[in-house]
Length: 151
Picture 1 (cartoon, helix red, strand yellow):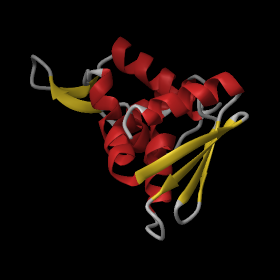
Picture 2 (spheres, one colour):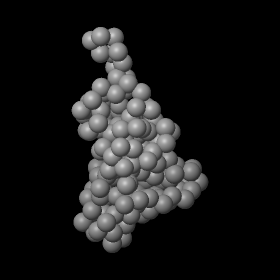
Picture 3 (tube, helix red, strand yellow):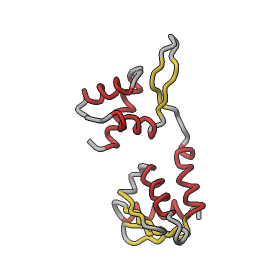
Picture 4 (tube, one colour):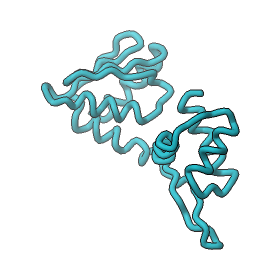
């Protein structure tokens, strides 16, 4: 099972039940045929913006905080504004140039990877150049338009 499916399962479990511990969540995930370590569960909870809240009887349980789409992309937008110099689309890929000799390409790649956008299959970063791979040309154009609106 890939991480997107695992995270969707975690979100569903959190909505359905009052889960108090990561161990309890790990057991529930395992009951659905998914093996995940405590460290993986912890990262998933953080990525999904799931935190512990206090229930009416004083018992704590996990719940997902709601954020606006802008808040979810804020770090990515800031990375583009401050670190990206240009983007060129080549078929189903985008070549993104960042400040020369800055190692910013890896930072920007990390923000794109964390965004979990279905228009992005993966990234490859060097010192100041980043390749964003999309599933098709249309998705690549869409990614380039997104980047260009913040340059």
